[in-house]
Length: 274
Ligand SMILES: [Zn+2]
Image (cartoon, rainbow, N blue to C red; front, side, top):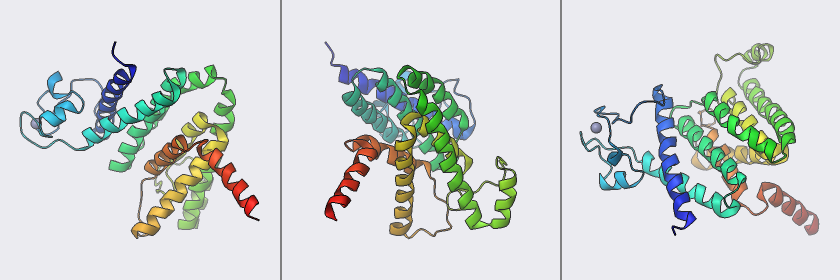
């Protein structure tokens, strides 16, 4: 009898590989249909060339046909997703929560990838993911997350977005206040968060509810500011925000009691020390 953990890891590797395809095709504008091919020589790949991790290691990270090196990203994302899915399984067992958090992790990996590489956030990925997540949340009796969580996340992220624009350029701010959903000329974080960030915030609000979202959102901003300070990046330079949101979600998932539990612990600690 094969242990279920092995099957979960294989499941993670296969979907990690699929996440890679989603990132690359999202950036290149190709559809998800059609066979995999080498992005250099365009040769169609056989199943032997596309086995997660193993093909990469066997081919020493090079295309079998033209010898061009294959991005290290494949190996990283496949392994990362497999590890994430395994740790979700060890926490939740084979339950509906396993499906929920695996979908969340899958979506975040794609969004981190596209935001990090090209600063693109495709709303369709978030919406597609919500088609699975919303019914699960209803099934789990978390309907209030769908309303409170989404609304709170929308208000919070829009506030930061508008604040960013105001700090940057008040004339432009008035213009955007008047036409809030103007999609053109949207600047990025500190130049102002993009509307893609608002979309992902709503997504996280629906999954985690308003309290946890609030802490995840604040902690992500704390991480961004920390990076600006320690890496001496210029304050007016653009930095993708989604990787920090995803990091914050990961920390929330790893810490005992999540960020809420840690915040309560911290408050008690402060009260005791007075
Ligand atoms: Zn090739």
